Structures are given as structure tokens and as C-alpha cells.
Amino acid sequence: MKLATYRAAAGDIRIGIVYAGDGRLFDLHAAATKAGAGGLHRFTSMLALIDGGDAALVEAAALFEKYTGDGALSVAIADVRLLAPLPQPTQMRDGMSYETHIRQSSRGMRRLALGDDKQAIAALDAEPLPPLADVYKQLPIYYITNRMIVSGPEDTIVWPDYSKVMDYELEYGVVVGKSGKDISVANARDHIFGYTIFNDFSARDQQAKEMPGWLGPAKGKSFDGANVLGPWIVTKDELTDPYTLKASVRVNGEQRCESTTSGMLFSFEAILSHMSQGETVHAGEFIGSGTIGNGCGLETGIFLRDGDVVELEFEKIGILRNKVSRRGS
Image 1 (cartoon, one colour):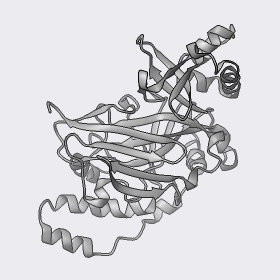
Image 2: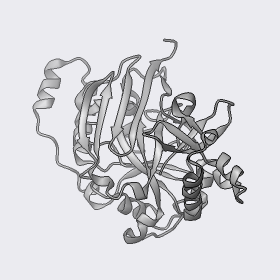
Image 3: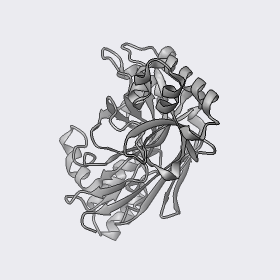
């Protein structure tokens, strides 16, 4: 199933199954109410549905099969406002899983520091890429990001005043479906609920100031709306092989990157297992893949401008579209 969170015409927030070629939403709470089903709380939010476990998904599928022909229980996506499928995840963690991005982004930071010195930039770009540091081969690298600043599809991201260098990141990730601690790699897939797209908007000039401090990005990646999820969650049964999906970036309709999800240094199962060692990973958490190679301006040298529309597309998931805007523009 594809599962979305949306604001209905009356203003209330609902969750629904996406169907009809991604054109309609089936209202799960309304269907459960009509069926007189118990446990209506399972369908009040995406987190509640996740907490309901496999039984809630089975019930959702049964409701859809029974009532999908009832027009009163569905709505056109064009007539509602899609929100982030997880408007406030239980936790958010983001990884560094793609070698090309890791190697190119360090050079991108050096290029950014050179400003408009074209000769120095050309000399830098002529250098061979540095080798991948051993730490990235030894264990999954990640950081905890701000779960309180999540935006959704079609939202306009208002850029903070302290930054002039606006960037996007081509990522996807998993939503955790079952809490656990010391999870084995072999059992980790049992803890995955589904997959969604992630645009980790980044204030690169601010990030460049912060990274030498050894504690990772702060204001470079933490401002209202910077963590964008959507357009919906695709349950894991729909993606039997999430590691061979086509992925791309378009800005104002122009192709900026065309790639695939293959080549992760560690699978989501391995990342999830690592995160859970000595620590409970909770249902409703989001775990990002890290940026796919060439999937951001830091690597290509082409950043965003005021008013740009960014589209991240992943095969079998969908398109996550957002506009960036400078404050007051």
C-alpha cells in the first residue's frame, strides 16, 4: 500500500490509502467508522497506524477491499492538501551511505570556501578525488536530525536569513514499524514499515562554518521546514528490492541528476541493526539513506535560487516536489 497523511477540506487531518494511479485517497478512519470496527484509534494518524502493527495493516487492506467502491469514502488528491506522511516522526536519523557523495562532498566544501576564485576552483576540480575514509567502510555513519521541523510535498521552504547558499539532497529512507533493541541484520527487515523520499535541504555556507567543530551540522541543516518527507509511505511488501530503484532530481523541470539507489555501503537492515545496538530504536522513526552521488549542488557546483522548484523522484515511490523561497520574496 501507499499511505498518505492529508488535510481534508474540513481542515481535519486524515490518513488514507493512495490508489487510482496516485490520484485518489481512501479515508481509513471514515471506512473503519462505517464498518463499525473496533480500535478506531489505529486510523487517527500514521504513527497510530504504525503502532497498530501488522494487524492494523491487514485491517486497512480489508477495509479498502470492502469499501473501495464507495465514493463517499474517498477524495481526489487534487482536492486536499498532502502533508508529510509522518508530520512528526518519533525520531529522525540520517546516514552517509553513498561513496560518490562522501568523496565529492568534501571537495565541494573546499570549493565553496574558494568563493569566486575561478582559477583556484579549476585547480581543485583537476585534483583526483580523495579515497574513501576507512571509517565509512567499517560502520554506518549517521547523525540525529531535528524531527520537529518536518515539511511535506508542495510546501514552500523559506530559507533562513543567515544563509545564502541553498541546496537540496536526493535521499530516501525507511520508516521503522516495530521497536527493538540489539536487532540482528537478519531480523531487521521485520522492523521496517515502509519507504519514503527525503529532501534534506541544506544551508551549505552555514554548514561549512560548523563542520570543523567536529559535532556535525547544526544550523546548516536545522531550520523550519528543512526536513521534507513524502509524498507518502510505500509499505515494504510493495518494494521487495529497494536497492535498485531509479532516482532523479529536477530543478524547474531541468534534470540535475539521474541515478539509482544501488551501491549503499550498508543496507538499511545493517544500518538499523547498528543503530539498535545497546539502544532501543522505536516504531515511527525515520532513517535516511544519505545523499545519492551527484544528488546535490555541493557535488555539482549548481545551487538553488529563489523561487526554484525541486523535484525528487524515486521509482515505485513517487515525486516529492517543493519550492524554495527567500524570506520576504
